[in-house]
Length: 340
Image (cartoon, rainbow, N blue to C red; front, side, top):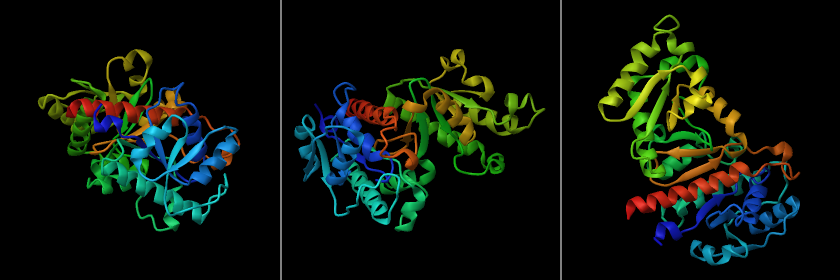
């Protein structure tokens, strides 16, 4: 087994007042039935013990000194690499101490993965507003991880993936009115090239099929409902095809995600946030994974937020966390094979 395969995954806590900690202990409790790869959590062993108790789980938690100790401990206990920050377990009530713990957990877990001591990074859900209060200067975790990897934020591409669908939003967190002005031939080509390379490297697809959505209803209907498809999206697709990339479109988004249509592509690139996220959440809400493409490391995250309102009440569904861990482990195996 290669070093990349044997190194554990690193899981950051997310905001400890959210559902992240309880889902980490739930994942460890289900490690055998879900066939999960070895992982370690970064943060507070005491807090994770409390989260397990609140979840009603008899989970053993053990503090470790370095990632190399995780594999031997994982069969009997959840290994936790403890940092300098500590916080009380107060589900549903975010605190400054909790935000500092979340930030430290993210920083350490990312560093361990960048250094190769861990094979992949799985980030727990954060509250961006809480992190900003304690000096976190990035718009979100994706931008932080990209910066830690020395990658420009615009080259860190968000993909939402579930058992039935993979989607990539071309534009993400901006007003809908700004979307047409942000879409360019160069942006479509740049993102599509990153997606193409990631599908090959991280999913083992030799010839990925990339379906590209139109912006307007009915993909513009030959210019009757907008000219973005004619002037921007179709020329970008032609350029990609000339490079040997299996891009098709522009496809009407209202039919691209139907069951019979999904068999025709491996990943869809949508023009804006909701065009990509609505179908993935409708199809795979409890098993959706947010994966960052274009990084030298593997980074996944469950596709949900902190859910403060239900934290600590044994209501949070663990499916997305399990899927994020599983996808990170599978991708680590693909990368190890590619590097061999």
